[in-house]
Length: 144
Image (cartoon, rainbow, N blue to C red; front, side, top):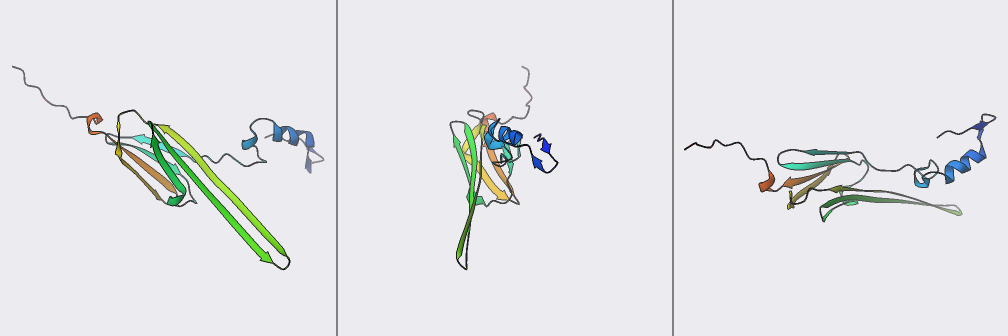
């Protein structure tokens, strides 16, 4: 974001308003950053594996769902704080969440063999392939 400064102390109000209302409001520096975690997706002979970097959550904050060959990983966390002292009440809350969806190759994943675990800030989802789509070893064919 480029902000022109007047007298090197205050940003130009015109640019602040343009930046606030222009472009993508929800990704503006005045609203907060887009909280989409980094994701690694890999494939091997037996499974597809998705790793989501999401520190600061618990496993109960996540929801993993497979519906019509779309795997959706979502997470929501709400924090509330309240302080009562001499003559005043202070309440604060924050909300963090994200939603990521992935297309799963049709008829390749065994729906009954999807595992998810959360450890050290990383959610790991493993989608096991069906036996019939796994690579088979080469075999020799005798010639008659």
